[in-house]
Length: 460
Image 1 (cartoon, rainbow, N blue to C red):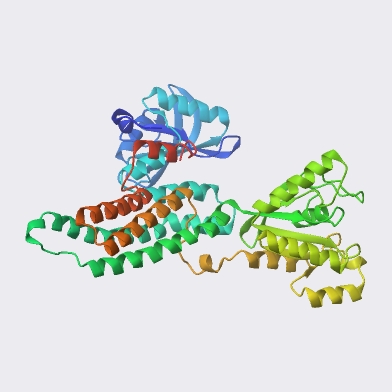
Image 2 (image 1 turned 180 degrees about the vertical axis):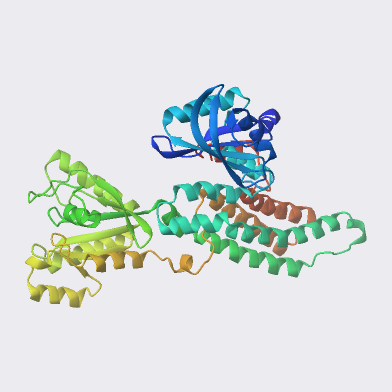
């Protein structure tokens, strides 16, 4: 999705609220003629005579026919989201009314907005940088406290400020080295190689921290894939239902009821966990169940967290030790969850508590001690870095650019050690600056912008 010069001059219109019936709907226009076009169909005060950030009651009319009573909000350039003239028309939330008003505005000279076009105009007009623009979409789609806070921090410029600081420090040395290239015959050194090395090493530490934060950022943005694994009839489906507070999974005393995996999201402590109830782990001659068991094993390998659930009344210590050993070899963080405390031998519980003191004891059927399990699950997702306000990378595009930045900075260090000539050194520094600039949009291509903004909803 790229825009011609003419399209950028157009006044665009779109529904800014979700499709469907509701109390109100908001229709948004942006462009130099937004106020003039709205004035043509609005019966009330003369909109072109009104100041910015004011709201006006009146009617939208198609000739003499009244379509709806509305409130019109004015945001006069540059004091608007897009830094253009913006009008927001609040109508009643009828899909018929919305359709009629938008068609009327198009007949008066507006054109339908493309996905993300309002936000793209805000970026192109200097309202914010590209990373902040992407955070707008993340904020709209945030469905937990953690993802909301991460998107809000990025939208307000926290991540961008850190990237710009890195880039500015590197630009100074780049300009000095470029200057030296103009005075090669005089053998003049404007940029100290030792100072450059210290700076690059410092930048590398920051870049490494940002790259390292992506695992946490990805979890915050997309949720933690969490597999509930264990023998058939251990209570996996009952546990999922208890955590969800609904009967999502079929519960039966018949072993092997769950043949495939069932997935749902649960918000725990402001973090989304994608819980996956899997087929029971056991040897089976049932073809369909065997497929489910195989899929369970694959899911366990790709999970971020495993809840190893076992039935206290039907599992011995040998079996638990064997399963724990397998899970440790798998290398995925896991929680040992002992289920059916109401049906177990107290002596066995005491023995298990001594040998595996980190075990969480619950009764999924009676919904007992589930808070302890939730706390343990949350403990394994390291949010300390996030809660202390450190910058967290949540966007795969930013992560990719940071990885390329790291490679370029390492090449600069290698070049300094090998005492390469200034032209090669300048080339590696320019590459580092290029990849950092890609994050904030100081370096962009039409294809990059098209890819980013095409994922936005229409009206944003």
